[in-house]
Image (cartoon, rainbow, N blue to C red):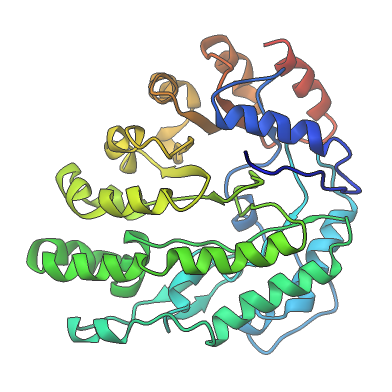
Length: 361
């Protein structure tokens, strides 16, 4: 039986009820209504926010300013509301490919994200890829985590950083386009690289999870869906560039192993290219849910994906889906509410009305 506890948060007095809804959703059930997160997918990467009067010699210096990053979050917290299953969460962030930096990869910084600079130019360098928990990137994430834990004082949750092992990590080591060529020319070496990219995941995850649990925190990352156990967001964005046969041979065994290491998995399914492999994912019992990221442009509106979302539900998996306010009524009319989590970017003034509408679903 998984241990559960109350987290007293100033801006989340309904924490216990919200977690009841989350846990029902993990099991494709519902206690009164579907969970709702009032945030758009990748909102943290769409717009930069700054505190006035600060300057740095470089973008990296700004990203690495631990005190500033926490102060910036706390400043945004002052005027924020956390309705429904939206939680106040600070998670240490140096960008989506920070996992690779624990192995010596350098990151290139932009305003709202960063990118890995591929470092494997020749297969002879594979032996150089070793986890170093004393390197500057690992130490910085550790520092950010502990600094936030010293300051949270019931104001917010502290989560763990973005962890992407497996093929996405391998692509960052090698370069995505080059790795696609490697699949055809050097498949044995590709398998070696994928194995290296996955082998230390449990150690890294447990390192940060143990720190959080010692401070009464839950397991939560950028997706904002907490667990009293261990919550992970497996993904494989680069799978959009490989065949179903390659996915089954090269990628599936690693994902199957990865998801067994934690108690709750929400697979980040990024677009219709990755969706080509959804049948394999739906067969993995340890995956509780799929986050469907429909894409942009012609991939809107959401209604064209209703059959796909129903397929995921029919396979016994829950779904995280982004729905625009203008699409809500038509979406509700077509869908079964069980096992759905709605992410909605909506002004806080209309959020109570949206909650009431969904309660009637």
